[in-house]
Length: 260
Image 1 (cartoon, rainbow, N blue to C red):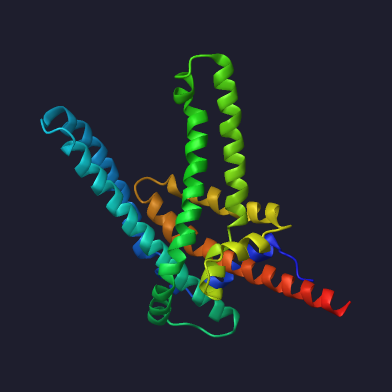
Image 2 (tube, rainbow, N blue to C red):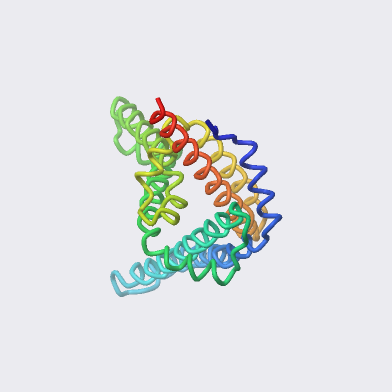
């Protein structure tokens, strides 16, 4: 029965990117919007502080920056989901020995976006929850508002458990994108089943790309952009290959059971 191979998957992903560099092209636009979004956020945060001090209209100085903050995030998120769908279709065709054109991949990928947005939002919400819980523990400020030491300890343990649960769920849903695009469903149930028994290997792959993204993002100014066009296609390609491996392993296992 085929097994998930971490190093082999990483190498195969790199080879596919060399074979079809247009996989990287797909993520240029999302990376640009991500860079613009961060620039806009920095500007809005600074202007927000100024507007609160200078404007006399209650609510208005908060409403406008908040709306402008959400809009670039939504646009970036949409283009990233679209690029992921197109990349999954291209990787699938490459694995079959063919090659899907950029225009065709984008056209077919766009059709998958409405359904793919649902699990993408759910996965992002879980990731945000993890980040918020971790930030709460690290900064310590919200915990100190409770005042009493026992309350702080209890809440710290609860938040720690929330982070662990969130991480577990996030990894179990790691393969939602290829499952959603290739099976024409939300992919959450399929990902949950495929990840069973492979959680630690999937976590290792997730960690590799997360660390890679963080290190590249440290580059001054263009770090987030470089991370988007390097880690983005790399991780989606690997995710799709992992999906194929586990899907094949599951099919082989079911056939073996039927033959007994």
